[in-house]
Length: 494
Image (cartoon, rainbow, N blue to C red; front, side, top):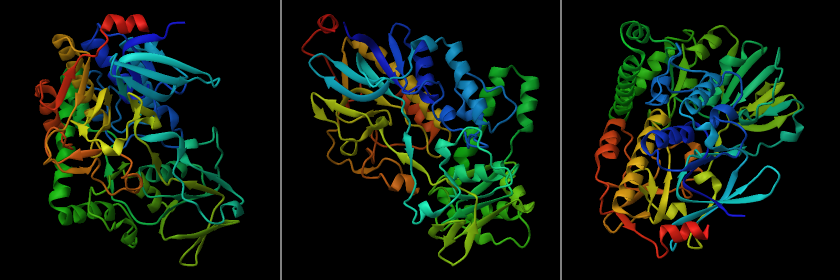
């Protein structure tokens, strides 16, 4: 039986994968493609996570696609709303028939003599299937869907209640009247705490160290006004541009004036909490935006604390005990349910084994080219969004750049392109300049970036928009070539 061949294979049917497919349909209509999805649903993160209150921590006018206006009234959207939005985009752009569900990618091997990727997928029944293509777009995100990160807590087996990781929330879990302890201080924890106070007896956020938390509006009066005055699409792009500018301005302010930013952020928290509240629980040791800010829509977590339904404890865990958690201070937190909102297990390229002519590709030995391709890795792109803004802003730019590249290759009559760094003065730096624990744990496993173009990553949408939309495709760092075997011969071999 002949192996199926596609011009492009997209790996992952989440926010990035569906977006990439929509861009291909519009800008590269002559390309054959398929989307390979390991699970049985569209949506990625927004289908996987089902814990109470699951929501975006970015506004949907920037997390939404550039080609599909967000029409919901809420700026900070629930997980179900985002999932529906992604599904609508897939249906509207007719990419659903291109999705192959139940195809978990295990390995990719590039054959330079044929300019051909062979992609090995594992199906649900355990069998293996091979597909081939000329170009791969990895839209696998940055974390493992199979396991979250949970520290090895002493005494875990002694606890008589339920222990849940938010990534694997039990369907219809009943927490009515229960004492709940949420371990963590990141976006997931500050979402769970207020969301669970609707039914729980009390919810405690137990953190080892505080994070910066900022209240954001759920609905924006300017949005309603512009929607009344302007066509939906025009209003969407005006709001989108404004929100990008505000987010970038806040980020730059925090990086340039960290002391002032710290005071401003803490002032916002203090005015939302009781006068006698211990602000040490919201006083991080690091500077703003050394880690991602946590958004609290309409200050819901602060409201839960003021109402006495939730509390915050800053301490270290000694061990789990039968009825809760013993802290290093000697205090015991009583709990019926412990939720380990302790982070994700970061992995690059979906933990797929990637090789070039039989030689393994090692990500941390390669630099990222324009945040899209990898040094010495032919015909493969990875969609990786912003860490200081909405993921989709960068994803849209990358997808557009890939379509430009594919057209340029056709115009040149070449079938392979490989980023090469011949500049020995380029310094290799961490791919992600953040101190978050989930990043620090894998800093030696992820790719690098350079300290100069085109190897340097910019957390700046407007600069990236210029560079990715206008930069010449005849960049000296891009090596174009044709294989020994012609395209027709390669297709016949398939």
